[in-house]
Amino acid sequence: MKGSGWIKNIREAFNWYLKAAGHGHVEAQFIVASIYDEGGTGIEPNNEEAYKWYLKAASQGHPKAQVENLVRQVEQCHPENAD
Image: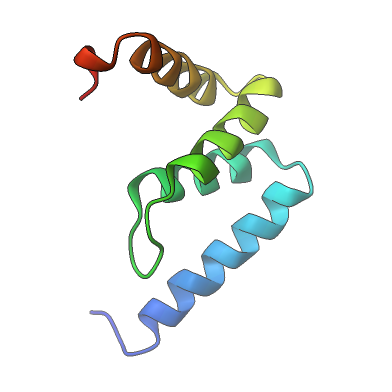
């Protein structure tokens, strides 16, 4: 059951993840990237922001972020294979 404060709490949680990501927390960076990548609950998809945060997480060794960056690089080289 979702109450009226649910959306506000999601946005507040995103803001906390964003703060943690800004302080170098690798898992928060990946989560922020994923949220920007897919969008949801008041947060519009933003490919540039997603890429920025995936790159930061990947540079710290986050394996899923490294895969996301690799996929994006392949898509840039071969846009006919995207999606």
